[in-house]
Length: 204
Image (cartoon, rainbow, N blue to C red; front, top):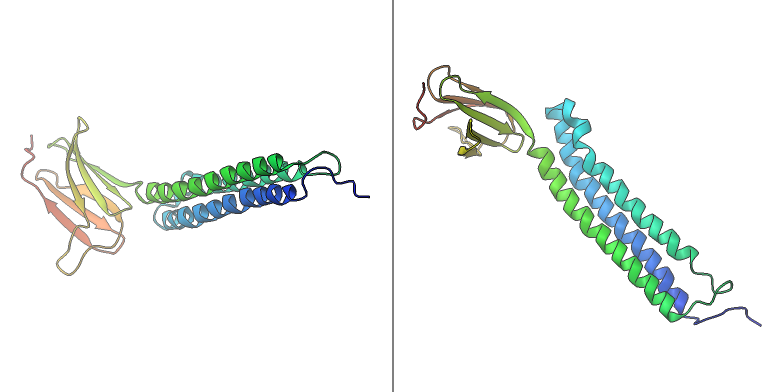
């Protein structure tokens, strides 16, 4: 005589929910690690001192995987038809809980991976202040240079600044202004220097 109590097909849905929580959360964590890890690796080459600050998305990836593991353990330990009656309601509840946790972890992993990689690559790499024009230029590792006023207003933006041969492909490594004229020299990791001139800003 079997000591099974409840619906015999119910544990299938319960364990399916536990598997969904673990698998989908780990998929999100894996994508997060792969996406943001590339940005951390590039930051280690360009600015090694910022690696520890840029590693937060990778840590969050591990947290997402742990969330899925915790939910999977909670669901699987709750499935014991011999000790407690386990019905289809319980199986469906565990399945929906596992899917909710797993899909949330997957979507969070994708979002954190994309945002983390963009944040790491877009971090400030260089800064320059003009002595007389009262403007500030900031360069990022994502090949973008922005010019601001001292009030914080964005005056101009330079994207993929061209050279006489081809498009720039290196990240910005240094910036400097001409002492008196509004000339901005931009150095990058591809061993090229560009000169940007704009006469709309009056020097003082």
